[in-house]
Length: 225
Image (cartoon, rainbow, N blue to C red; front, side, top):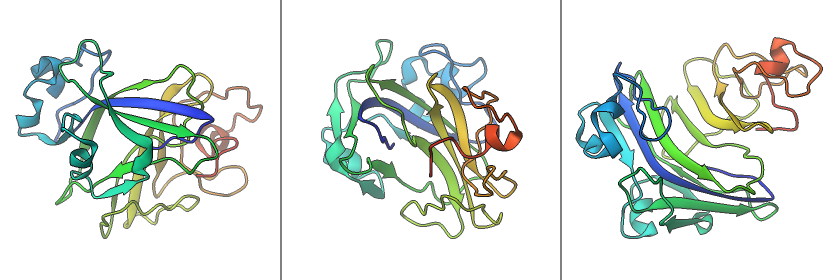
């Protein structure tokens, strides 16, 4: 997770990644989508042992060092700490708090590969933003690299060729903080300047006069990543 803001703090309480065709989504906390993996595990109790779940991070380790040991690339762990602020309906006792002050670095991240690789993955997580949190530049990302690397490769501003990279972010967008995707893929659209920045998919202009697909689904105004 990465935050670029005047003052931002966030707590991520749970992350689950599942493989296969079963939906792993959830609505409000405690209201899993019918038929999804989460519906079988109220409060997420036992979900780690489901054969279709390939990775779970619940931040219940006894120390931040123990949490970091489960990830391959850690950026600026100084913005991270374990917190007891967790969802009221949850069963865990800890979350990961990430706090970033604008102008002091570029935020932090946890990154790891899910080997040997999967054709389809579903991701679910819980997050709480501080009421005074500034805009989030990038948030939770998933994707694939060929060949894979133990660090995030980047690639901002370039369109993937189709056989070496695919990434998509699950991110809050704009002043309304709506959830949307931010994706780099071989058929992505360019922004009006001809550059390739991540594509968004929810149609909402938020005061932008140009409502062309390139504006709606191309580069976010004021964003360069």
